[in-house]
Image 1 (cartoon, rainbow, N blue to C red):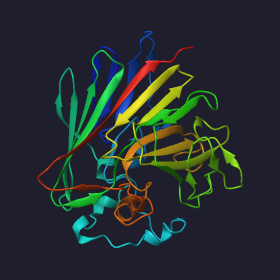
Image 2: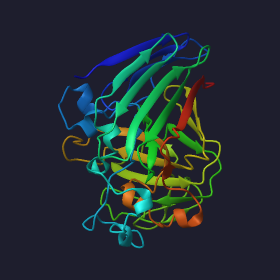
Image 3: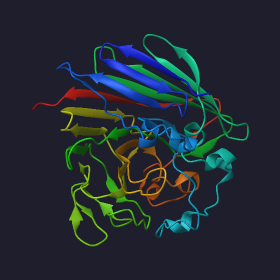
Length: 343
């Protein structure tokens, strides 16, 4: 049964849902007294339409373990990525369980339970199926007293040693005019466009980039991918690999700047999911408009097989999965803080 829990603090309020342990509507009170809601909520949620759990919980943020989905031979990955879809999973990484094949893992598809709720923190927990090498994941949401901010963390306990991609999935609403939402990443080693021959994408697949301000297009030329939303309908994904110091996001429509920071030693990349009304099929129906700014240890959204293989990102020394040992909880989190943007 779906439940939710809310928490008020000096600078806002946050609601957390049992479905996927997802953060829902969250208000932040800025220095000038205004309240802003940065997070996206899928249009089918707003409309009250029932969809499958992995999409039914597409709200502000949820933890993905394992991150992505397992791609197969029929998926349109370009080389050298396509050759990795049937890479063997080493025994030391732990064989895949049935729940590893769910979109964004069991954590994104199951109902979480409340562990504790105080004036300062909400803690949820989820036990994984018995055949999974993951035993349990716990998630905490702690507002920052005196600030328009949140600390969000997970602690993962394994039954057996395993290697799995992981990521948080913060989704920011794009409510303003084209180009009004600015993405300003911290330093990173290199960026890659999504290596999938995807008709909905505008970026040329599997291209190395030095700047979001100059991304190669399929039809030739370059375009800015650091100014959203786009004027046209599309779906694009870019991974910034070996990132430092997190992300700075400027929403000129809501006159707010967001700083998203995390432990980049554990989650060394940021996946940018630019969902710009490109998916015309159900339940998307050309309605979804948001940007996912996702701290990850993952190779794009390609799931556990490719993330654990010797893929092109891992070959450059950027981890694309977590190694989780039994008996030692693996803890990682992020912080989001908002500030008034000067007029």
